[in-house]
Length: 109
Image 1 (cartoon, one colour):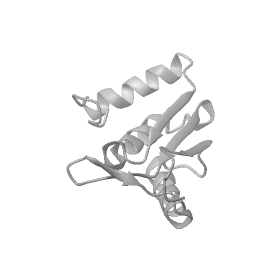
Image 2: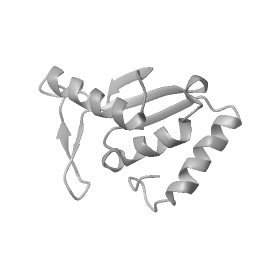
Image 3: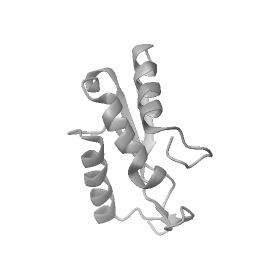
């Protein structure tokens, strides 16, 4: 929904799709802070507004992307993880994330 895997939906269509999934019983929403440079989390925030208790939020962190979207590495340093989580919760508009995990193992950690 944020351009990582092909054509991008209209934001309103993306939000409506997530909301319909929730209404049909989908309760796990999985994202990553680097999908669309955080755009995916912003869409999810709009979709779950007033529905937070109905979903389990799972989010990945650590993936580093270049300005053109290319994958350039992993950052698993503790300070970076805290920073990633702060921005994720802000974009999602939530006080907590249910499942928070690295996108890949950091070879330096």
